[in-house]
Image (cartoon, rainbow, N blue to C red; front, side, top):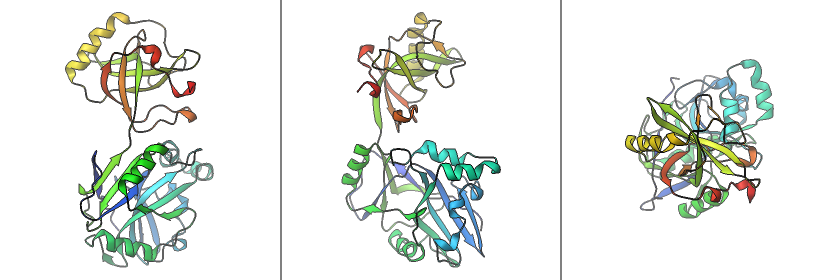
Amino acid sequence: MKPVIPFEPVQSERIPTEGLWRYEIKWDGTRILTYHNQGSTRLFNRKQHERTLLYPELASFPSYCQADSVILDGEMIALGADGKPSFHDIMRRDLIRRTDRIQAAYEAVPATYMLFDIVYLNGEWVHRKPLVERLELLHQVIVPNERVQLAPAHPDGQALFQVMRSEGMEGIVCKRLDSPYTFGGKDGRWVKVKNYGDSIAVIGGYTLNGGVINAVLLGLYDKQGRLRYIGHAGTGKLTREDWRQLTERLRPHTISARPFVNEPDRHRDAIWVQPMYTAKVQYSEWRWQEGRTLRQPSIQAFVNQDVGQCIGPWSR
């Protein structure tokens, strides 16, 4: 079987309610499609890169699927110490390139396959069928076990999103029940609504590209009054002129010593500055309890706030 390009949701700030929708958890993992035909099972990610050897959890195909030939779509996740999906942990599995390390990673970081679609079944392409019919087929052939699960749905998208927000999880995916599965498609029949966190952080350094700042290094204070590095951001709602003005503003405040108590990522070319300026940052995840930095941080605006009020969660 030739790998296909999966259908993708579009991003939205609004949870759709008009019409018939299915609301699912947006699992924070890596998209994996399973191809089984003539006794052979292979796994590919959304970019059509093979991942078969990386996930022994799916090697025993008859233990979880009763189809003779099939293409399944789902998300491979790994649970962190808090029992929630951890993107960092699943990447510990997905980025392995040496086969002699696969077994140790398999034992240290168990993965679970959350199945949510089927596009081919027993010699027939079913991707043009509406989602509600594809889900019926999926439930008919899958036998859930500890490592293979059918992704659950919730009838109330707003309620599900509030749970995701309170639990600090990534968000939800909304799917029209009459939607076909378009290979390589991306449109409003599938919608993702992400739960973003935000914080006002202190700028403690920056990097340059062509003499203009292209990223800032950010921190928050702990209860000992030390500035702790939490991540760096170079994207967001800023224009080239905004970055140029920030460059002029920070240049006079350069210092030689690192202002952060911990060593930042990608600090080799960093220029340190006095912690005087602040920025509002949006991010998709921050597992600070595990010592992680912000995931996908973006600058929303540069703001005027007393740096002493930029306190991290370690102090709460």
